[in-house]
Image 1 (tube, rainbow over the protein chains, first blue to last red):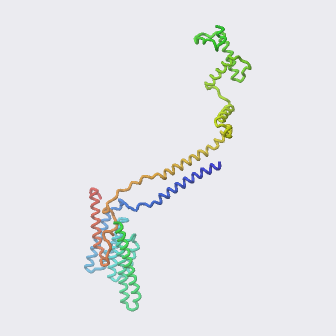
Image 2: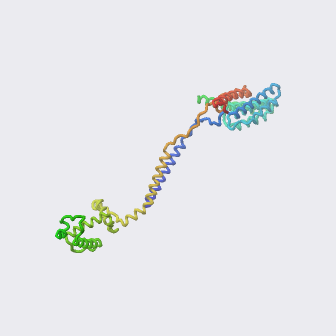
Image 3: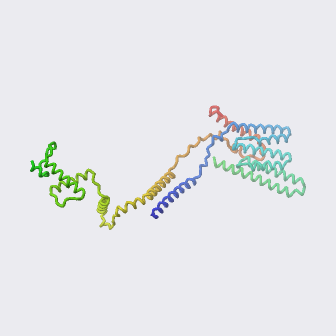
Length: 192
Length: 193
């Protein structure tokens, strides 16, 4: 009788092991990397409204820059960062990063290097993926370091070491930007 | 006629519609008593050959009507004898287990047999279910790329350093491209957003 019970349990165990093996085999198959656009990902009215508003703020900023009113131009660009885009829209990241790049350049032109650095750092921290717009943020970051190096140079011999360090950081930022661009271009070539 | 009735096995068969004679009735009563005694195990030690022949016929007729049941011990004996004969006990050296013992032992194993069979069946069903490829879930229809909200990388491309602050021009391009997609989708849906 004991032998019979053992046989029953052994068969049950084998069945469970076979089932687990099948499940593991299924789990081992990676899901398809092909992504079908979800109906919620389409270009809708909300996205167009947000893009249109950002466009208007940029145009206002250009007019203010033409008039030499950099403070108003900066404020106009800053408003783009608070626009409500549809949740998860990739365009939102791109438009905000581009606005941050312009905002940082406006701040550089006004000598507000720390504020410019903070604007870029926030953009890099909030970015969900690599893009040409993220690479552009690193480019502007390099410009900030260059501007800071010039400021150290202007301060005399005391600032020489800091200026050299700032230039090294600028080179590192430009390198980072180039690396991202290269990766994205290579990826784009592979997908064609 | 009387001589004929004295030998019922060899005489002619009487007319079924004819009234029984007193001799026939007496013979029937005597034979009925003889049959009753035989069935109750009190067979007379000496009976005539004719009566014995009639008695055997009567016994067979009664048995074929299904009114005869062997005692349990006699049934087991008869079955065991048949089994012994069927498996050829002498040739194989195996013996048949007495039915009185074999029956209960077999029933004691019945729950385990049922459990084992159920487990095997469940295991087979589970394996078949897991190995059967399921039809893929219906996939949503692919949308045209130009209708989809997506990264603007492919539209803008790498941004040169001298164009780093040219966000307005890039946004104009993005807006125009997305507006095309938005309008195309809307037209395809009959003007519905």
